[in-house]
Length: 360
Image 1 (tube, rainbow, N blue to C red):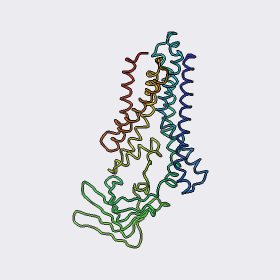
Image 2 (cartoon, rainbow, N blue to C red):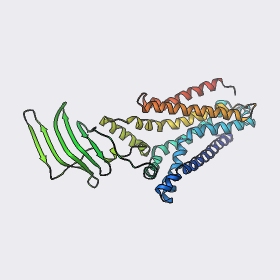
Image 3 (cartoon, helix red, strand yellow):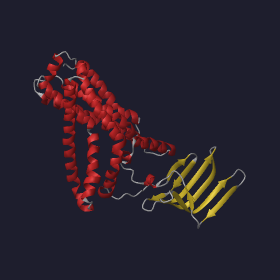
Image 4 (cartoon, rainbow, N blue to C red):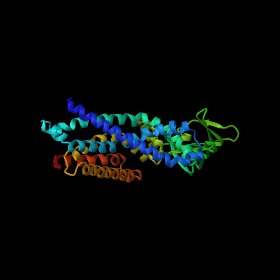
């Protein structure tokens, strides 16, 4: 690694860190002003506001805006170097443009690895107290309003409940059906089922069990003694699922996606998008940094303003493209992995075209 490489990597990283710091600071100030009325009404402690919420909100936004900040900061410092003829001097010393891209690859690679580790394991843990704070002090109290819920709780076992009260963790008109060889062989029905958190089991009240045989059925009734049963159904399944995917590590997302698929439940697209996005974001950092170099490496007569403006336009297009494809995938009209990777694919193609066509 040459001195020029170290110089460019240093400029790359310091500009990026400074840009992220300033933008995140502005976001936090705006967020505080916007939520101050909520804080006055719900009265959380200062410790909760700053340590549970904002201390965890800052890294969330820092990672969220990383690809765009990489692009904008790359355009800014590279265009500034080009205006001072530093890029011309580097290329004039015998360094090819392809070789010039190496420190940008290294710098963006460092940010990409950091981003992947953060979003994969550390940020989900930091998001837990942040989201709990939002649900407690900012959003309205959550009440589960679903009706007539059908779920596959394990292989060949299906649950039904007419309603659920999340304040008491109680399901009403609860039914478990066991199926073998496409035939109903056992049916358990209870007027209500309450989750016992200490035992991690459901207590069934006023229940009856019907075992369906080929020649005759067997019936068991019990209205006094509750029945304890352990199934893959938890109060969290009926809790506030808003932003739940942000509190899961990569391995937890994999397990939860498998669980939703095994139940045949809806809403798996949101978790798939979150899962694939955690792998796509680091690549977006590298792609956008190289695009930023290509856009801004040429010395412009009008100064750096035009190049920075072009950078903002491309960044805006990336945001629009990302939001549209994500929205279509959440609606179930596009494969989640394609929706997440489509902006990266399109902007990779644009970068390659620009590499061969844009004068430098």
